[in-house]
Amino acid sequence: MTLVQKARLKSLWVVHFDCGGCNGCDIEVLAALTPKFDVERFGIVNIGDPKQADIMVLTGPVNHKNKRVLRDLYEEVPDPKMVIAVGTCACTGGIFHNCPNILGGVNKVVPVDVYVPGCAARPEQIIDGVVLAMKKLAGEAPEEDE
Image (cartoon, rainbow, N blue to C red; front, side, top):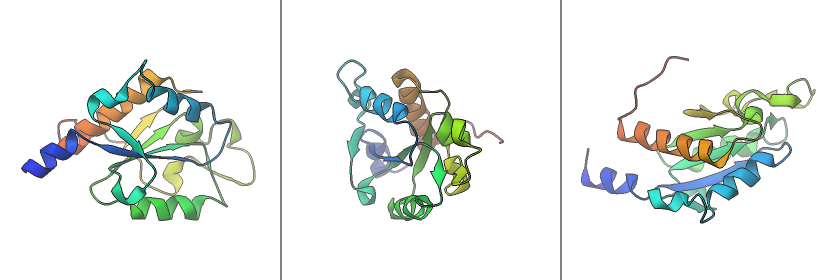
């Protein structure tokens, strides 16, 4: 691992995108950024520019209208990148899975590296998911067969 890669792991930048749903997981993602949970202690910063991000945090189910936007955002994030699906809706489509305009979880459009289930996923779970993504980027976490 090069010096640049090691330094990058100490200051990961996260871009958050909500595909839809009830926004419960979005509130929990933002709660993880508050001083109570202090995700910045890991060097993680939430930014709005996907071209500078290392990790994508996705919430909500994918529908026909936002699948192209999601795919475009994914392609703008430089490699190597990690994708975290937060909440049951992002993982499987959740309570919206039978709706005619819903494709399902975000894995129907982009590859997902870490799943954080829950309705709504708690900030502690989200932080654990981001730490797991950091370990996967560093090559420390075992790869799981899905």
